[in-house]
Image (cartoon, rainbow, N blue to C red; front, side, top):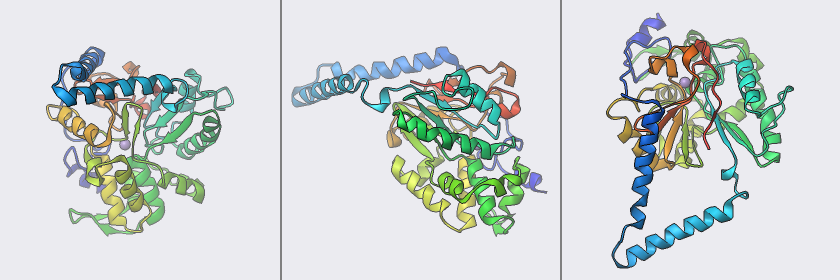
Length: 342
Ligand SMILES: [Mn+2]
């Protein structure tokens, strides 16, 4: 019944994994070579500052460039931005795979204690569902956050569509409400259809729920704009990182199932950085939120390339080098990728 409802939606709508009906458009090329070309083009663009400019403008730009250079030098070793940045996404309850990947990177030891020093680790959301240990993943991240912060590092997660689904199910259960398309919806029902494990709702403490509901949905870390889903829908909530996160936080502290459901819909959109429109969309997001590239999960690399899950060993750069997909598709049998960005 609900699977049929799911099929009524287009690719960019309620297109949950497993409900996909439209083949993804390809952003031709992809691959590391293309990515490097994109980067070169951008850094080439940056050199415009050194072109001769008339009068005052030239002085101002040269001064600004000098200021940046000096600031960068002074900050080396002092600012957290200079520490290693790691990103993973879509753990989907695969606790063991995450721990193994973090251990491989030297971020945790055999007892899963933080050994990453001042490294920064961002998970891009979707901690739950499809694997049964989402709550364990939450507890691991929270246990690592304190020790990491004590060493000048950071461990945190963004909100993904599955967090909205889990927390919405916990808050609204099987309460029926009407979707924008006129259909009746229930969070719990939809969640279980999408790989939810009901036991996990009882396991989550109030404190863990508050923590999850107050995570960010968008964040710029260094030169990377971090989001969960490959969609421009974030721009619908605001034009700055702060305004988007505040708007989403307000929804997630509300008791309006329709608002939550709309958020779930928006964060479930995908594949919007692929194809001809992709680069313009990403540039528009970078203009608003900052950063030089967008890093996301949500749409697995096997689902968006010709690669099988077993063949994915690294993140996929695409969209003229502007986008980096770090979702190896762990629930499809792929690797839990922990990617070093900077
Ligand atoms: Mn997702």
